[in-house]
Image 1 (cartoon, rainbow, N blue to C red):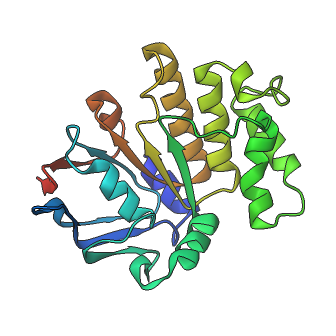
Image 2 (tube, rainbow, N blue to C red):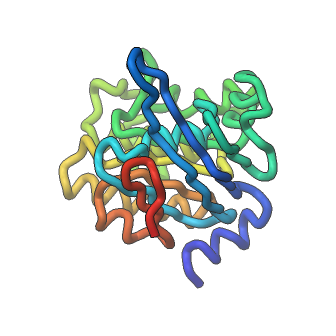
Length: 234
């Protein structure tokens, strides 16, 4: 059974994403800059899809639109049938809180919180009564059971990214966005983090959208979407 098939059996109706004729333009003093133009695709529940392209090709902008962090100038993004641009900022934030996890190149951990507290945070924000038990369990799973009370500054880059992975998966999101998750790590550590990412992805049946310029990393996904100058190429 492939990773995506295994995942689909777990999350048959959640985490599907549709981009329809997406466009993003920005007004500059002397002209209008087109960042994305006429981008359309569908990502099924449980799929692992890589978005690749050179720097400046529009990858990060596309990720922001897919996650509802920004709204398109043209077209629409639907998550599980809900058109994100029809919601206000609070509505989009609510959907992200319920369905979406993020892993970034820069870890994005809160320095004043311990590893355990960083991982508990999404559950606490969601209003879960017991945030600590699942947070401890997933930190054990990523090999940080001995580092629960350590602050980010006391952890290596690889350990910080493991905390970030644990935080992303602890709320069992239907959809996970990973933006250059190995960009700040050495090759060996990056490989270990990617192995862990795909292992967690398979275990939870999460739809994975991975933004990367690393072709080897992209090849581990079931499908690759390639951006050139803001347009998808076959």
